[in-house]
Image (cartoon, rainbow, N blue to C red; front, side, top):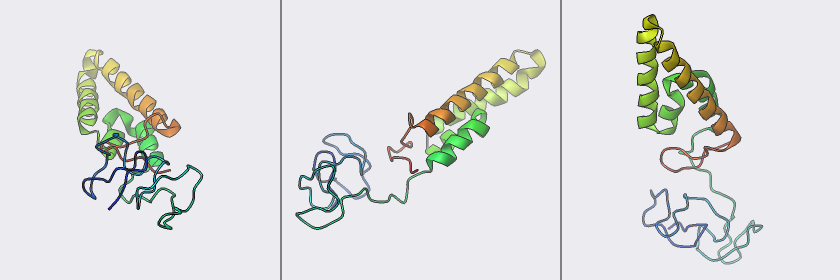
Length: 144
């Protein structure tokens, strides 16, 4: 069983990504032991109740913050970074706007679609790298 590190409540299932009581992402928080649910201080490295290390567990499903940021900067107009992070609806909107923009480039108005989605992707890429966007589409924190 895994306990919320923010409020100490047990997760309903092992696959849960958010705590149903406090809404914190799995593995976020420093107030409780993830193994036994007993209170710990943020500086604690080992739980005194159960002896388990209290550092954040490595999440095998965590996406790379660097990769997502670089995807946003270099391929952002196509929504690649949002596909990678699991924000599929936003990614499809970016992709469609870019395709429509390239199709309408002969009418000159399309250039504005392409420029807008390029700037949108660049800004999101920078936001990912500086930590303003720090979770993927499932609420799992991005890895460094």
